[in-house]
Length: 265
Image (cartoon, rainbow, N blue to C red; front, side, top):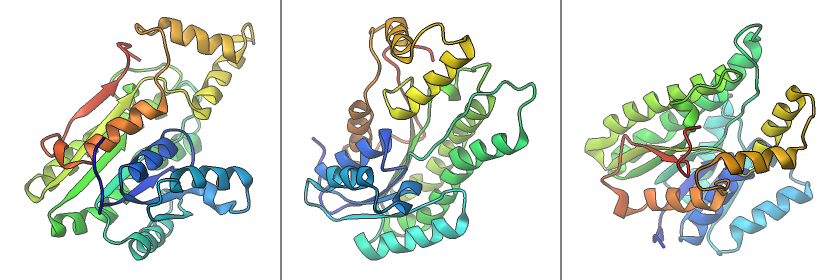
């Protein structure tokens, strides 16, 4: 396992799905972690407490605070709080994201803007906040959680596909900006990953089909269509991200690493 002892990381969207798995894995690898999520606003929520407990089990410093990546003031406050709690930020994982299916015809501007602002501009805000200090320190690891949607279209999800394609272009720009300063930037692009968000997406598909099958049946069909006959798990993404944050991955930058089990989408 990669050794990240003495390093500090920010994980956005860190209280659910891939973000939670990544934050947990980084902590287990020895990193201090600052978790940002809109979910943190519900501090008395039992589910929030259970999730944070998972991250803290390794005994590293763990900081959690409310973060809305679509709000510059929230980003500034969160990054300042993270630096106070865990020190200089060595690693950033942009895992916050959203999606909602809708074809181009009749697509609402507000929905389009919300998805782009979260998935693309939100990641930009976070990178802009931490990149200068990483460059000054001569070390940094930035991992953007993308999707096969960056490369493969989906008729009913234009905003999501556009946001992830844009994130890939942004990843490459940041990689070039940081390359001479020990800062890497890569995108990890999975196909379907088994999370609550996936189940919500599949529910939308089932509803659109007229509820001719259950969500579980639709999930099973997705697994059957994958060449490996399964759905990618969050721990697989977390293990890859942990490696990408290590010294061993210093030569990996400007890449789009697709985790698909052989699937195109």
